[in-house]
Length: 283
Image (cartoon, rainbow, N blue to C red; front, side, top):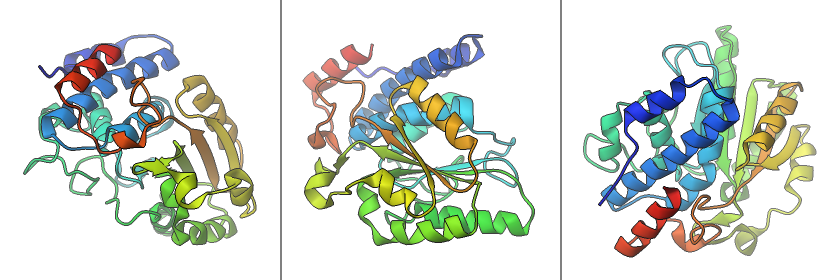
C-alpha cells in the first residue's frame, strides 16, 4: 500500500506559528514521504539525490527565497536545480507549497504529468536542467538580462558535486566575480556520490573550498542536512558582496538508514519489502 501526506496536512503545518527550523524539518520529512510515494507509483526516479537535497529545498522555500506572486516572473528571487536528478524531491516541495497542483504527485513520469527532469513547461521550474555543469552559466545570463531591465532579485542555483567535474562549471566562475554578481548564490549538494559510485573514484575534486575561493568567490561550508547549520551559513554569506557558494555537505539518501551513503540507490526502485522498511523509518 502506498501512502502520502495530504495537502491539508501541509497547509496545517505551514499555518502553525512555530519555530521556522522545526517547521522546515517537519516539512522536509513530509516531502520525503511524498517523494517516496511518487517514485514508487511511477516505478522510476532518483531517491538518493532527492533525499540528500530535500533539507536544502525546504529551507530555501520556507525561509530564504523571496518570490513575487508569479514565482519566477519579473522581480523576486529565482531558484533552479542544475543537477536535475532531484526532480521528485523538488516536485514534492512545490506540491506541498501549492506552487504545483497537488494532483501531480500521482503523475511523475506520466503523459501530461511531471517529467523525469525539470522542464520549463512545469510551473515553478525556471529552466530546463540541460547538460550538467551549465547551471551557473544560465544564472549569469538571467542576471545580465535583469540588470539591463533594472529588475531586482537573486538567482539561487543548486548543483550536484559530480557535475563540478565539468569544465564549464569552472569556466563560469571567473566572469561572475569580474562582474561582481552579488545576486548569484550557488549551493553544492555535496553528497560525495555521483550516479552509483564515489565522486573521488571518478575524478576527485580536491580542496573544493580553496579552489573556488581562488576565483574570488565567497565560500563557506555547512551541514546541508542540519537546519541550524544551513541558516547560519546562508546568513553569513548574505552579508558579503560578490558571488557566493555554499558547500552543503549532505548524505545521499538522507533519512533512511539503509539508503544513506549508498550509490546503488541513485536510481533504484524499492521492492515491496524495501518500500515497507523505508516507509516505517519515515513514519
